[in-house]
Image (cartoon, rainbow over all chains, first blue to last red; front, side, top):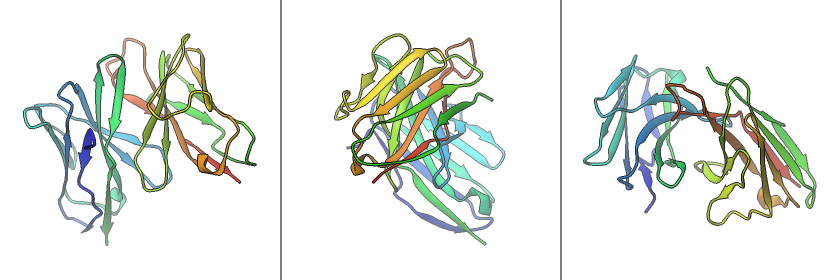
Length: 111
Length: 119
């Protein structure tokens, strides 16, 4: 089993739709959580950090449930420019800092 | 925001040659840099953790004699793919953590990547 698991996707949604991505992690020592966005043939870029209290940045809302070891990302009012791969990322600092990436979920937003 | 550069962005080489990729943190110091490899339609796989002034830590299955890492300064790490073969063709991405007193110390900043094609 992978340490970070994501919805396999791809998600195909119309503009304006709300889409939710889920992610689970297996290592309870995980300390920091992030969502990254990766466009085709580009490097990953930080979308937002994820906190237990939940956090929102414009149309994007991230949630963390430590008890269930579950992370989510909600995108409201999808735009064409949201089309990308969304990576769930978990970091821990046990015996050295380590970041583990999920396989990513591909999102296609259609006009 | 913090910037990480990589050079070259793209390289095509013949099988058996060695290729060096540089990763630089441009406006912050990074005691730790990471090297990832990404094959098409797959996730980033951590290859090794590069520590300034000491030996790199390699992930299981990554040959340290084939992928030589040098982190000689707080702003530069290099990855050398020795005797490259077609199966080494991939997208190599480095990242760096800000070692300074920054709120975003746990954030990794990624370089733009180097696309390697071995013929």
